[in-house]
Amino acid sequence: MPIRLRASVHRILVYVGLTGFALLFGEVFLRIADPQPLLPRYVTGTAWGVRGNIPHARYRHRTPEVDVEFRINGQGMRADRDFPLGRQAGTCRIAVFGDSFFMGYELDLKDTFSARLEERLREDRYNADVLNFSVSGFGTAEMIRHYERFGRRFEPDVVVFQWHASDPEDNVRADLFDFEDGRVVATERSYLPLVALQDALMKFSLYRLITDQSHLYSFARERASVFARRLMAMAEKRTAEPGAEAHAAGAADDGPGEPESKTPYEISLSAALLRHAAAMARGEERDFFVVEVPKRLSRASYGSTIGVLPGADLAELNVLSPLQDFRRLSSEDAKLYYERGHGHLTPLGVAVLVAAVAPRLEQSARLRGCKQ
Image 1 (cartoon, rainbow, N blue to C red):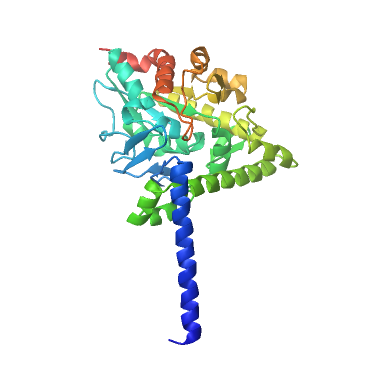
Image 2 (tube, one colour; image 1 turned 120 degrees about the vertical axis):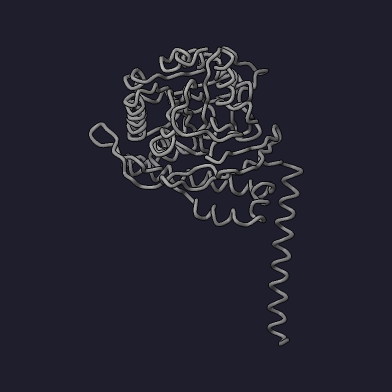
């Protein structure tokens, strides 16, 4: 082998060796000094142009607080069985749409909102199934598309949309609807961020092993994701509010004790989307509810997330909120949100949420025929 070629090969091997050592050192260091939450997202694209859970996926979420298994049915729902399409005689259905909070990130299946709600309804002698159509990262716009193209095929009696602080920005980012003359207009666009890359990588068992097990990969992915969201949020706010660069920079950095910063367009679009969803469900003779997930300010303090919407819009919607119950229970001993993962609800938080909303849901005229 020529001397120059041998030297080049040697340098490459040295670089590869140093890189491998650095990666191994970073992985070991994080595992010992700062264990990262391992919350892989098994998502793919759907035929209707938004993300969906990978059917039949099996994976785990591990944080310093939890170790839980995720099981996705053949229809992309977090459930242990598939559900037949169409109306089922003698059984009522509640269709739940949300993001990672209602999908049940950091929770066992039995402790998710849908599972706990179904358990509560059956204890109260309602023959009801609660179908969980939630997908991590969803905003209201994606929930509507998911309902229109898929969820309504199951003929639910009641439709429940989750509301969270991230929804206004998510709704603009998805670009699935425009807001014109006080009403929403479907764009017929798709919103599948990085799905093609995810699908390609998920074909390799080594990638799945890394995303499921690597603390270093989780560390890098989360920080890259936060950085990308901040850049997109600043760009969106510049577009929506000319001259609002300073406001955008602050809004992208909202911390636990800071107020939500939303642009007028984000608020108007989100309020219109909820009105649109409610009108669509009621036009199909289904009851519609919005369930608020409060914002955790500290272990003993919680704030409203849906309060950013105009009061006139809220008055038109059946908003169910556990905020007062969260505040009533608040103390340093009551942990309603996980604190060492990604801040999702604990089983106690879900239990308080279900206790707050179930009595209102049980007043639905659509569920009366299912009372045993």
